[in-house]
Amino acid sequence: MSNTTNGRLISLDALRGFVMFWIMSGEHIIHALAKAAPIPVFIWMSSQLHHAEWNGITFYDMIFPVFLFVAGVSMPYSFEKKMQLAGVKTPKDLPTNEKRKIYLSMLKRTCILLVLGFVVNGLLRFDGFDHTRFASVLGRIGLAWFFAGIIYLNFDFKKQLIWFFGILIGYYAAMKWIPVPDFGAGVLTKEGSLEGYIDRLLLPGRLHSTVYDPEGIFSTIPAIATALLGVFTGTFLKAKCPYSVKVKLLLMALTAVVLIIAGLLWDINFPINKHLWTSSFVFFVGGFSILFFVFFYLIIDLFGFHKWAFPLILIGSNSILIYIAAEGLVDFKHTADYVFGGLINFLPLIWQPVFATLSVTVVQLILLYFLYKRKWFLKI
Image (cartoon, rainbow, N blue to C red):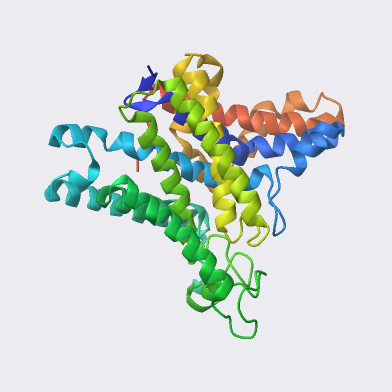
């Protein structure tokens, strides 16, 4: 039914690679294209590769939550072997000793992601605690995945749903009704939001945006719901039931449409906002996350068309490693310029930035191919 590599769904690696591509170098290619050939489609694509200033959403705002969603989808698959060995059908029925081992493994993974997040933020260039940013993308992935895992391991599906809706409704209620000193309740601005206030009060070091942090403390709570949505998707897809895989994918697509509509309706009262990770944002992007996954699973795992996605699989199978490297640990631009700079200089000046950014992608893919062929993967 599905193509797998070492127990991994190929479509998951490809989707993970698709979203990571835009972070590692894809966005720069499109921005350069929009300048070299300012036609409407390139200009629009370039505009979609910037974060929304505050309320509203762009494609770039979806990248992080889709990645977190994919981490949730993989959870039921990663625990499947443990359930088979223990002879149980649900993770909640796993023996206490086995759960204890899983908890320790999850805690270790979360701690590693937190530390790697500090490194990406410049910990190795430490300039005092006041200038260090402690909140991070990797840290949020680790924490949201960890708490989603705790819920998955200890509650049946109905109670997991209660947690999911409880988190989103509870976050909405807190953001709308708990007053912030000097601002009052329900002020969803950078300075006046409860999320920003908690960051200023409790988050040490430097905040990303001075008065709040987009990966701050309080807004990590609804991110757990994003990971849980991935867990639900993975659980439903692998569950044994009368539905065929195609029917399952259709039901998932319909659910996605419902979530998108629900997000748009909730946006009227609780704006879609990536910076605050609002409940409407979770619904809206969650719907698109499911649609992305349905498309990749249908084409790659069900129909078996996966050769086209090989570059994405290279990225997705070492996504954390390439993220850390591309965020500043490795100077890919210098290497690409050393290898391809002479050739690029022969091109028309206006097109040189396009091919310079493309050459960075080529260097990154060569590194990832080298690691892939040797089965060297950063496993956390």
